[in-house]
Each structure stands twice: as structure tokens, then as C-alpha cells.
Image (cartoon, rainbow, N blue to C red; front, side):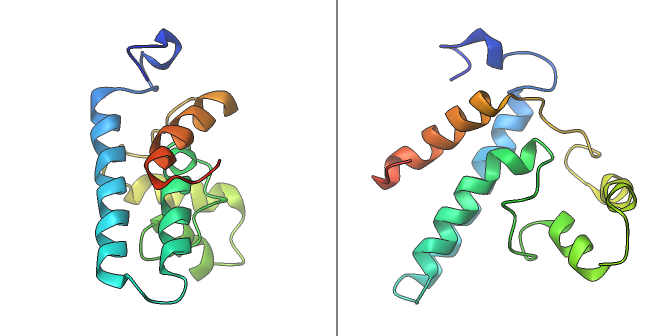
Length: 125
């Protein structure tokens, strides 16, 4: 994507380290699915995990439904009385990969990455 569209290149966009993290997240989702093939809801969960990857990396955790893969979701669910800014502050302090820094992509950019990640599933998106 980055080589075809230069609007994805640059600081806080699709940096090499971010691409590696996205690939790692994709690999984790696929490995999870491999271990749960045939179980009810396994394919839906895997597709949901993959779809959430770009928004997760942009700091939007609305598609992050599983605490075992998203620390933000785990923190939010564990502290329902906390305001959003406190959750974000705590999440940034515990974030290992990027110290709370997120990608700064438009909705179009997020959609392009989601489409690219989903295309191997033969799922219309």
C-alpha cells in the first residue's frame, strides 16, 4: 500500500515498525483461528480481530471486543467508572509497542488497510 500511495508514508503512518506490528497482529489472529477451526464463532472472531487491527493501531478501540488481545479493552472493562481520558492515559503508560503513539490515518486509509488484510478471506468488505 505504502509504495502505491505515498499518503501512507511518513511519521505516524505506515512506518516499518508499524507494518511489522500489524503483521504480527495478523499472524496472531490467524494462529488463534488455526487452533480453533471448527468451533462455533471461531471464523467470526478471527475476521473481527483482523478487521480491528487498523483501527486499533489508530487508537480507535471500538472494534476491539476481546480483552485477551487488546489491553485498552481490558483496561476499559476492568474500570467502567473511569472517564475516557483516564483510560487513555493509563493505556499509554502500559503500552509496550509504541508508548501510546498511534497511527494517524484517515478513514479512507484505515479502510484501505482493512481491505488489504481481508482480501485473502474472499470476504466482501
